Length: 116
Image (cartoon, rainbow, N blue to C red; front, top):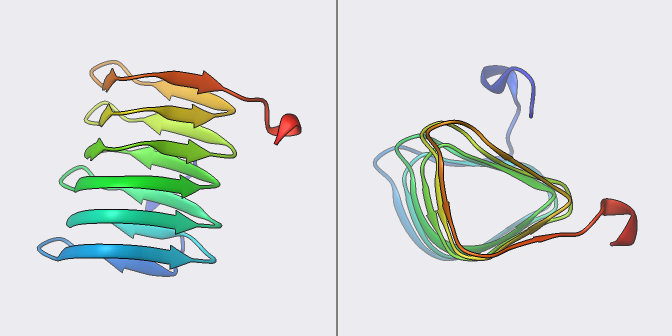
């Protein structure tokens, strides 16, 4: 989805071992490797690392989930569940990719990006 993930520049990182509760807003990309609870609203992309635990409603351009996300996801673009990814909640986006081994439990609404 994002090409080489290791080279993706992110504006903000919630690092491994970090726990954050609250509202996170940003105009660029973010990466979450720790624990996050609350609300995320970014204009860029969201990457949820394999060990991350997120309990939040998320609004973003697109999201790649390698960890656990519980909450509603609203993306203008693609929602990608990697093999280790788990999503529980409502999902709205223009595209959905679920890798073998990933888990999605909830509702899905596909809206072409041209209609947003």
